[in-house]
Length: 423
Image 1 (cartoon, rainbow, N blue to C red):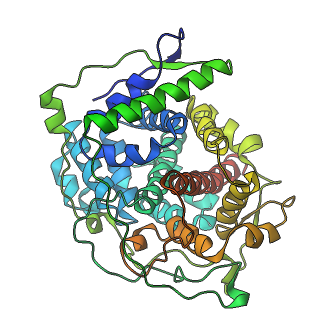
Image 2 (cartoon, one colour):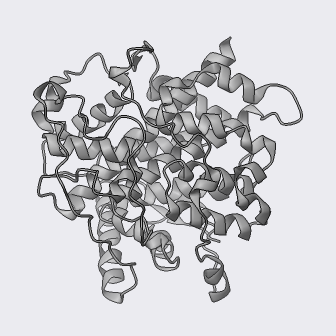
C-alpha cells in the first residue's frame, strides 16, 4: 500500500515521486493515471484526494471504504473498479463472503444502497428523509461523520466511472451490448428542438496499453517535472511526498485485480438516469446555485464533518478549471454548466444560449453519454465525439465531465444533509 503524506517543502523535492510511484508500480491502475498524466498538475491533485479518501484518517474502516467503492462502481457496471476494489477489500482484511453479493454484506452497508442508486442516476431525488433514515438511532445506524465520508466516496467513484469509460480505460475484454437505462443518450437537451438526436454508428476507441515502457515513463517524468518547474516560477507552493513506503514484489502481486461480477452488488437494475427537464409526472424544483453553492455552503459543511476533505476537493475543482486549453475559456464553462444543467442545476447569471453556440451537437451527445450513461460507451449505442480532438483535449473534456458530475452529486447530498441538520 502507498502511504503518502503531502506537505510543503523545499524546491528540491517535488511531487513527481508520488506520481511516478503511483503510475509505475501498480498494474492496471496505470491505465487511468496514464490518461490523466496529460495534465500532471491535475493528476497530482486527484491522486492526493483519492489516497486521502481511501487510506488516510477517517471514521470508516478501510474494508468498508473499499466495499462502498465496489457498490458505487457496480451501479455503472464498471468491472475495472469493482475488481480493483474487491482485491483491495480482501487485502485489508475484508470478509470474502461479502463479495458474493450485496445481500451478503452487513445490513449497515446494505442501507447505503438507496442513496447510492439515487446519487448515481438521479441525484435530485436525494432528500433529507434519506439522511434521516440512515442516521436514525439503532443498532445499524450511521454517524453523521461516517455518512459524509461514505457520500464523498460514492460520488468520487461514480464520477470516476465516467472518466474511465470516456477514456476507454475500462478493462473488460468482452463487454456485453445492452441498452442504457432511462432516456437514451441520443436525446440532447439543447438540440431536441432541432431534431438532432440521431445516433451515428461508431467504433469503439482502441484501448491504450499500460504504462510500462521506459520511454513512456521518461516522457511522463519530463511532463511532471516541467509542470512543477512552472509552479515554482509562479511562486506556487511545491507539494512533495513526505513518506513513500517501498512496494516490494509481494505487495505488487497482492495488487492484482480480483475478478468480480458487478451485477452482484446492484439492486433495481432498471433504475437509471431520466431526463430532468422532461419529467412531467414529477415537478422537481431546479437546483439554483445562488441558493446553495459549493463555495458558500458545501465546502464548509463537508470540511467540518470530514476534516480537510473540503480543501482537497476544492483543489481538484480549481485544478481542472485552471488547466490550459487552446480553445476559448468560455468553452470550459459551457461544458461545466451543461453537465450541471442536465442534472437540474442552474446558474442564474449564465446565458445558456452559449451552450448551443460553443458546443456542437456531437460533443454534447458525447458529454451527456459519459456523464449520465458511462457504461453505454462500451457499445455502439453511444455517440463518440465528432470533432477531431487531440488526445490531451479529449482527456481535458473527460476531466471536466468527471469533476462537474462529482460536484453535482456532492451539492445534492450536502444540501440534503444541511436540510436534515436544520430540520
